[in-house]
Structures are given as structure tokens and as C-alpha cells.
Image (cartoon, rainbow, N blue to C red; front, side, top):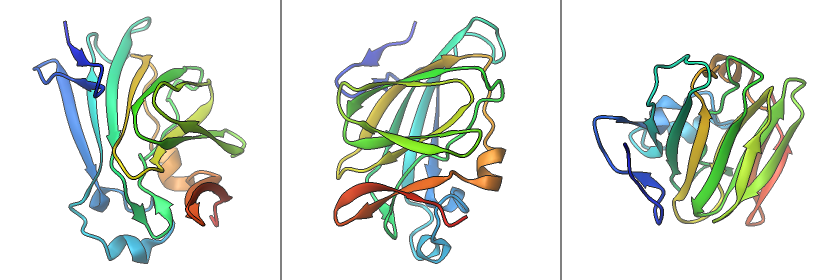
Length: 183
């Protein structure tokens, strides 16, 4: 059994909860302005993930549970965000529920059509099959959300590294705006 603090969305640390941190230096190629990224401290934490995986990865019918915290910040006008991925098994879904903060769930189908959904405390989001997804923190405080996904879904990060998303969420006149990617 694992416990969650519903006020923060955080899983209580235990040997069953895996934690990872992504820093700016690990997100090369994710942000559009490479020069602005290089000007920032590569040790800056962008997001943290906690995952509870009670069954082996690849188990059909199993579920994983996690919490992600995306820190506030920007690289040039682009908000701090998660790497983003498709699922290896493209027909798998995922659910997100926002606990704290303001953000944008960025979704892209296989034809690169990209859209976003605003995230705020209490919002629940379904990531449909065949859709890549990433999250940007569009607020001034940490964005915290919980996620649940099939244990056999897998993650395809390479497609995103190679092709990116069809649009990016940037700050335009103080507002989170979806703009078509230059790439």
C-alpha cells in the first residue's frame, strides 16, 4: 500500500515509490530557443515525478499511479514543461487530475494537430489514444497533478525528441498562448 497527501498530491516516499527529477540540462532540444536555454543554470529543476508501479511494467490490465510537480519558470517566452511522449502502445489512455497550480495540458495527435486544455485545481483530463501529451506550468507557483496510466502503455519519448510538438505554449502579453512551432 502507498499513501498520498491529497492536499499536495504527493505520494509518501517509500521503497515502492520511484522518484526522478528533470533539470534544464537534461531537456536540450525540448525548448525552441536553444540559446536562451544555454544561458540558464542547467542544474535548475524543471519537474519531478513520483511513480508507484505495483505490477511489473508491461503487465496487461495493470495500472500505474504517479504525481508530477512542474516548477514555475520560462525559457525565453516558453513555459517550463515536461518532455512529453506518445505511448508505445498508441491505443492506451491516461488520466490527469490537477491538485494545485495553473497549467496547460498540451495534446498532439499523430497528424501533428496540437491543442491545449487549461489545468487548474480540480480539473480532470483524459489523454485519448494515439495522442502525445506534455504539461506546461503557466502559473507562478508549482503545478501539481496526479496521473494514472496502464502499466503496459510504455513511453515513446524518441518521437518527441525527433519531431517535437506541432505547437508550443508561450507567454504572450502575460497570457498562455498556443503558437505553431517553427519546426
